[in-house]
Length: 304
Image 1 (cartoon, one colour):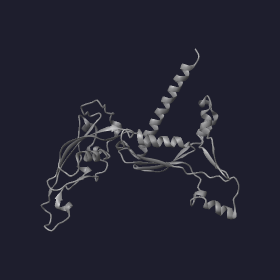
Image 2 (cartoon, helix red, strand yellow):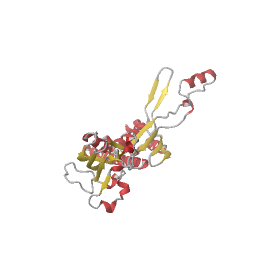
Image 3 (cartoon, rainbow, N blue to C red):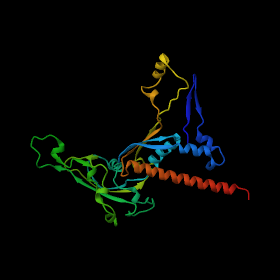
Image 4 (spheres, one colour):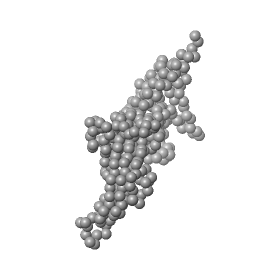
């Protein structure tokens, strides 16, 4: 899958048709030697990787494939997020709907691969498709605060309601499968609301499995790519012309010979490389479905 090339001539840019487009015009792609040769030249290099960030280079791939992985990561790799909030008491200054929205955006440690997608017509919250949380916080005066204290965070107890206040309430046999530490918010220091003395928040929340195309709160992380061009000079450029050519580009560009790269950043229970792995599995499923439907179409249109 040779990447498309732009040739910069004296007065224009020429977009040369890439090897993938040429191969797709052939009747039998499986037997295309050109396609096999181009695929053999493709490789993936991991530049750096940790649970939260991963940077990789896709060498020799068409940019459309790299963009497809980016779109799958953002829209189709599932994760868990709070979907329904039952507000029993909220006397803080944060409105109920605003607080519920903020709860939905709190990333959770819960691994979505252990849960099923919830049926929208289901009325009960089951252990196989839901995770329950409770939040019960009351703000009161701090009896140990100094008489001349002016900092409200010291004057009052529980003035700031943080994501650490969300407590996991197991459903069914979830205690036999999950540890409490793996069911908490991914970050414990996310500010949900501020309260004054006498204010109270009492609610229950339920998290479900979803995908980013339904709501951005289900996105497992971020992914983006950039094109790092390969510049080939058709002739030697020396002297003043070389200096002039170098000034036509950003510093260092004229010396760079590299390939398209993609960057994956996780803000969910899935690690950065697990997000990419899920995206690859989804892509494989899409390709298998496309090939199966193509075979059916060919069989149905073949003369009997």
